[in-house]
Image 1: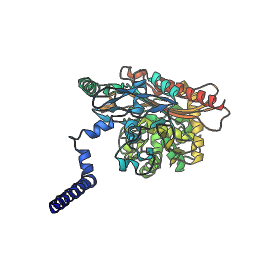
Image 2: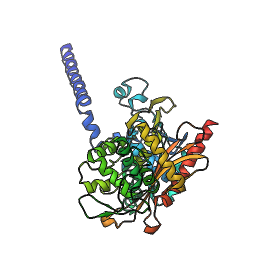
Image 3: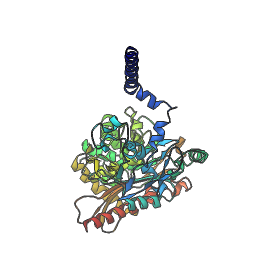
Image 4: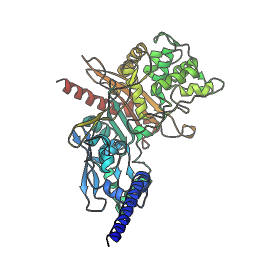
Length: 491
């Protein structure tokens, strides 16, 4: 009898060992494959079993969660969804995540190892912590001013603190309520279909992912290239540029909207936006010099993240001289995101240096303990400090006495540059109205804000569209809020 018991016990031990070996094999070698299997619902059920952490603007959450009572239990909600959708993106059980919801998903969803009480805790327990919070750099009054300024027109506004790179406002219009994509079911799918079929593309983040011909706002980049290359040594001296200007190698004449551009100085060309002067200077700098200069501003960079990815702003590296002339005034194949043009204004305001732009200030545990903080980092030295100082003076003159007077703020030093960009086959499209600017309060050491505005007003008459008329007033309202907030902070 004892012999049979021993044999049974031995058999049980062998079976137990085999079970443990197989369980270990599955956990070590097949766990990832099983986790990724679409038929495995446990991952999704676990993911939505707890509320996500919050995305915070100016100390207040702009997100929330509601208990749906469904299998994928907690659904995302949004406060002032259309206002902050270009920042938050959406978190949907059906369509995944975008923007900050996507870039900080591990923190918001509680899987980031930094949220765990001990190293490797999540790996050992295969669990997750309560969702952490993401504190953004956005200032609510500036965001609201930009959103109201666009007033539903297609376009975008980006405002940056030049000294730090903090993104203070990021608006894309028209927008949408990301809450309609939370959850599952017919209603969510209908909302997705409606948003994607809209000709206004409300889910397109125009601030980060639309590229436009920058038009005359690009002349600030060309001016920086000409000054740094020594092509222009005196901004008030004649540039020996004819008007009309014939594009090199062609019979095509480049026109001016402004008068008095023949042989005008760089200062006059910035103040009144002379195409001929800036095209001529771009050709004189040369293709290699222009490419080197524009890439110091961030053009052709495919790796910029804020932390969401940013579309590449383009300046061709191979062009004929006539194409280079057109590119030097922000036309031909030259394109830029609104963020890129805000970085151009920021470089001028910050003595030539561009601080790397960022949207997330810090992340925390659900209890408020800081997990990670975004520090200030240099992105590029776009121009020499002396060139930046000269361009500051020229941009201020453009606002005080030139094309950008609608951006003037009493009691503040404001520099700006207008742009009205042609586009479409044969330039038949309705022009884009641009304005880039920076503002500095009296008695302060440095500008508080740099801003870029683009307006696609398809309803307006072509003759009524201009950067100074359509975009500059929006920039002024955003800059006024920035200066007011800065004054409040100073007490």
